[in-house]
Length: 356
Image 1 (cartoon, rainbow, N blue to C red):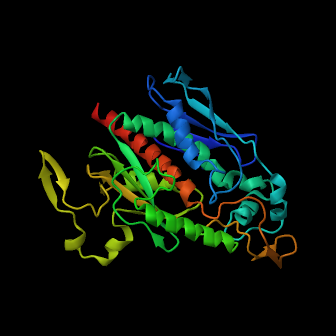
Image 2: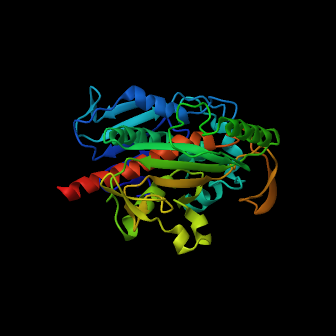
Image 3: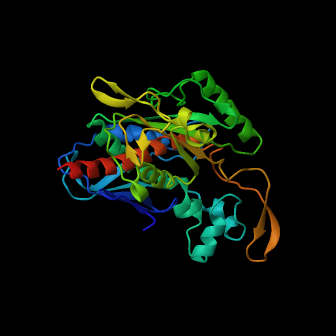
């Protein structure tokens, strides 16, 4: 099913942007694992709306309510089920899109597929709001990975034409704006402000790294680590591209430049460089797993756009009103971490079962 993911764990996400609640079920988590709900809530707050001048003013606490699977903060073996209640919805803002779809959004394709039965309010099931339950599942997996000595870190690598500098070596989660170079972060915020002032939006790039992974996770062909992470990452509606290691830049290199020489360090096989992003043949090689995702500009913009009326099939101008992020990148950072954590934890469970 399109709303489910996983082989060794099974994640299902449900709800719509303006439904009474959104939520997730997560099956396959071993019993006896402690989940710190305060740590989980701090992670969810990084994605929550209405916290800065570069996010939507929609106010949602994004507090998770667990219905099953936890007893005194310990997994009990039953499926984990959690909901997040929607409390600040304005469905009337979306009435105009019933006949005139927003360019760049799923309004048109949803109409084609579901014939008008879809929930249009807030974008329904296509909304970035659905990444909140993704982050519930990802936040749980992040804690389980941390217990294994595996960390997931990330940063905003670029917004518009502004690029971060420095190397991603440590978490940026505690920063008000998650970049390595704080000065570049301020320039990115100015880029967002400029786009917003012009009734427009801007996209960017998020870089993520998984540290402490053992070699041997993943499989060749369809279940490689690239495949698994890409499938989870594309559940984030704004993601339009992904690359691992040197990615597309490797296409301009020769083999002698792109190959990572093997070395032995403290009795362990490693590579001198990491152009492959920690993955060879779909399987982790023990080096940091690195990837970047491209985030498109928010399609809901205040400026006038050209569309068509689906009832009359005539051209029509459209101005999007309501509450929307001028740049979704800052709030997508924890979503990318969540997607990576879900994919990696799923593969880690499979790896452990293979070794038994």
